[in-house]
Length: 225
Ligand SMILES: [Zn+2]
Image (cartoon, rainbow, N blue to C red):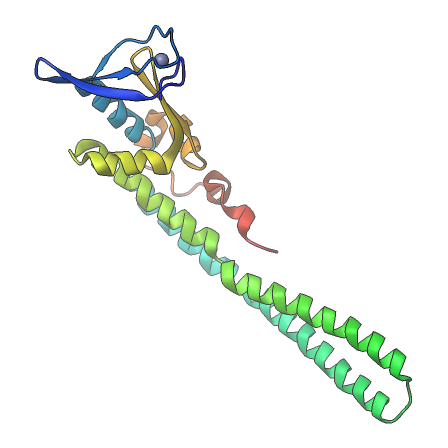
């Protein structure tokens, strides 16, 4: 898309070179042609911005492993607690039925109390199902993000245009051309990588330092407490 007028971009071949330009369907637009080679270079630069060096990949994956190990125990407790609560509600339901059969409570009392307990049971069961479904999803997402960002430099250096286009779609939205430059709105957490100066990523991380990997990756929020 043209960054000035919002029209589509079209390509044409002139003297053996491919050029891209704004279709200018909406009228006046001052944007000029951009040569394919020059555009390709900018696509590669954009992809390289979110590339994660291999030293970092290894370090981040190791951090995730540790995080996974330490969260395992609290996850177990969380699940056990829900299971206990469900069991307790079921026992109360049994006692309620006994009381009803012994005629110690009226039918109205029984029905009202039963409904309340059933609602509680549904609530706990849904929480449990929800946790089992997405409990450690942030870990998987983080791991995938690390692996993808480590692939960026390879995708940028290869000739596979389709892979480049797919990767651009993955990392950003609203691609546009203006002043012969490619602009892209980086998606999270790619944006954080794109905004991190390359120089600071070139050194292997200090392994002794406590890092805040979960915040850095931005996925921690999806883990229920
Ligand atoms: Zn335009």
